[in-house]
Image (cartoon, rainbow, N blue to C red; front, top):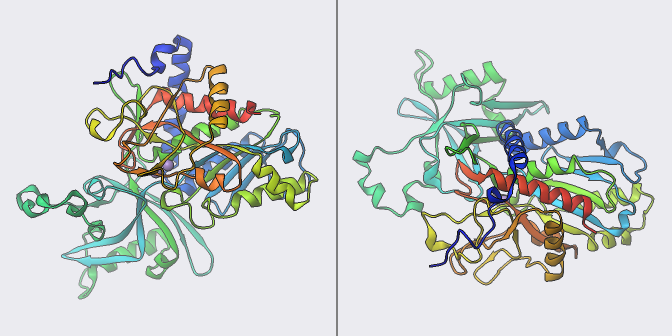
Length: 460
Ligand code: MN
Ligand code: MN
């Protein structure tokens, strides 16, 4: 038996009363953000507003950029970059890259149907979820519907205290013997994740009266017609709010902390960076949970396009400089790791996994079963990062995602590494990751913010 209490630092042991107050204060802002930004679009809108309020200027509107200037890129409302120009952008960037998409249930393009005196929406889940966790919790519906004429309708139903909510039903235990004997993965199947949206008919209508009533309400209240679902991005997410957890209020419980804990801490950090030596790019990406695909994911040329525009406008138009700058860059892939869970010790190797409240986690490699698809950071770079964190008294720990043959996972680190830059994963340890109510330690949230700030400001 390995004694865990003494082998890792504990942030709460190490902070004075002043730092303790700072931790709790910082997390109030974090909780507020979690409640305002449950989708990638809402997160990017929040980030853009904060940046504009602090004097960041849209890069697109600038002809020339120079040292110390603060710039904003917003790509299709789902990927954003906050940039602070350094002395010579061709020397490379200091990047902190988080993602703002989160596992959820997306409505299908033809979602609405009726059955047994009820109306329901069909869904297709996005990202890795445990399907059984989604029935019988209140759900909110967020997103956009784009009409054929280009008009965009924003939808957010279920977040206000007196709002209606939606729900997916589950079988009563009395009739669930067969269901309960199934594997957990099959007890609730993908096609069972149907959202209950109504139970009243249009009076005297003979056919499809329940479905028609919902269509009438959608048109009357939101201007949405049935065909419009075809060009929509509607996401069902847990309707409950982010809360403090524990009698000591030491933790935050919320939907969507993978990876908005990194997005928020990186945002607060970059808003405090001034006149860095190296050019800072704080990037907020989309689509990480489904493999960084699409034109707002990190397998796209988004990073390269931003770098090319920056260098061109800094008076360095030669294309090879873009490649050179990216190759000389340093990056933190700001993403979460799994915290050791005392209820499930069998999946963790306790010498190398990460713990709640033991500081921000440096994860040298991710991947699964033999480091497959892992970036596996170079020790030269990990050494430079840990030296910086130690110099700045940022509490950190190592992390590995579970036991070697158990499972695994990936982050955006591998896509950043494609450019030749140095990159390591660095983020917060999470309990119940990818569930509707994930848990983090407030102390780790604060240390992530401090790690990202010193990295962007001081890494050379
Ligand atoms: Mn993540
Ligand atoms: Mn994830």
